[in-house]
Length: 422
Image (cartoon, rainbow, N blue to C red):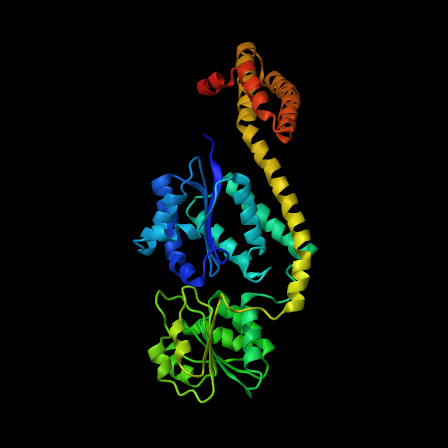
């Protein structure tokens, strides 16, 4: 049975944020799960993508391991009732479906905000984690580099990535709308990971706001604050800063809520206090909405106001889909040729073995000059003999008729026996 490329996906399309945050994998969990998949199931070409919008595992194996992988996620996350979450996962057991889904995700077609640029870097980091563990073979290497090249084409040839319609930008536009009647709104950004940093850079669209940032690693917050012209405070002063802020944007990785209802109750809120939770798992308790004057938004209920940008992106979707289709076709042509590559190599080895045996047989008394001349001639002859079968075999790949030709070639030259002998 041949290995198939497969995928399991839990995303914003199939699960609300309260489910996604339970399943979400941090960097250490991704590493641990990759190792388990390698050790327990000998999977190859594995990719784990976990963002605020999705947790997905791509892998090559002859069997459908979706149930086993979901159970492993449960073990990794300490979820004893993982069976209750299986319905939220979508399974891709067809090779083409899994590949097509990965392309769509990587290009941003499946993002909450269509065309979100963050996904490209997230996919690259997922691939690097796989490469670091030596879990990527020729198939995945070629697939990922085809995806990266496709992304480059999308950027260069379409308007799909034009404008600043991302989740981070959507959050900033929401803040702008809700603080429009506030003079110099005081904004506190907690956490400057990828999303937090992106939010900070989009804060330039709020020129009248007074922005303060903080992070557990103070030097990182300090560097970003210096770059953007913002205030910075040590993380230990965050409680006091929250009390004095009109808007708190939280983008930190924590297994349990960082901002709780009991904490917010202690704040003096004369008019309003806006909380924006961009973390998955969520870092703000949803019950804080019960407190008068508190407004809370998370990644699922933020809606982008960049309508013109989104309209342009949506108009470019057919062009993006056409580019993806061309890239997948090119990849499948390569994949088909890879199927016949072992037979071609066996054929080459069989002819080379005959050539070397005959040279050894007839050139025992030849001098170096004669040996060099005949070696050159026989190599040239061998290349000419190889050319037609190889071309015909590759052409048969494009017609999906390679199997029969490979069998004929293998039988004619007894390639299995020659290979074993070698």
